[in-house]
Length: 267
Image 1 (cartoon, rainbow, N blue to C red):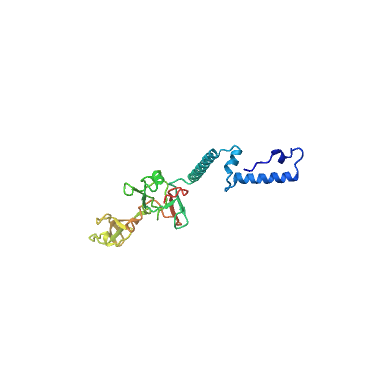
Image 2 (image 1 turned 90 degrees about the vertical axis):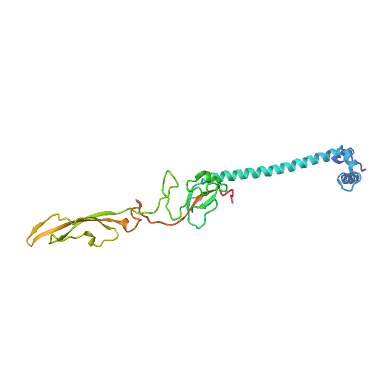
C-alpha cells in the first residue's frame, strides 16, 4: 500500500526546505494513496481507510441511517408543506364569501363554488356546508339524501326574517262604485239593471224595481228606479288584487348560491 508523504514535507515546515523533486514525489504518492482510498477498483481500499482509522462497517451503517433519516425528513417535509399549504388555501377561501350567500352574475353559468338558484334538488352529502347553512328552508328534496336550492328563476328577492317563503305574482286591486238611476214616464214600467250590458271589471252592485220617488214636472209625473254599479279589476284578470306591489323596471341576471369554497373541489 502506498505510504503517505510526511506532513511537514507538504506544509512547508520541513527543514531543510522541501526540494522540487521531493514535492513531485510526495504529490505522486498522495495521488496514488487517494486512488487506493477512493477508487472502486483498488484492492487496497480497506487497508488505506483502516490506516486513517476508518471502520468501514460502522461507516456504512451510519451512512445508511443518515440516508434513511434524510429520506424520512424529505417525505415529512413534503407532507408538512402540502398540509400547511392546503390549510392556508382553505383558510383564505373560508375568509371570503360564506357558504349560503346568494349573488347575481352576468354570465349564463355559475362560477366555481356556486350553484344556480333554480330550485334543483342536490345531495346533502355532496354539499354538506351548504346543507348546514340553509337546511330544508327551500325544500326537503327527497326527505333523506337531498335538499332543494332556492328557486329564484323569474322571481325577485325580498327581504325577510324567514327565508324560503314563496310569494306568487300579483298586482294591487282597483275598486270603485258609481250610482245612477233609470227613469220611465210610466209607473207601471219595470226595468231590471241586468238589461244594461256590463263586462270586465264592472258588475251590478244593487238594482231595485221599486218605485222610490215620484216627482212632478211640467210634462207630468216621472218615476225612478235606483241602481248601483261597482268596479273590480280582479274580475277581468286574477293578477289584480293578488298582491300589494307593482312590477318595477328590471334587468335579468343569473342568481346563484355559494355552495362550497372553490379551493376545495366537491365535484
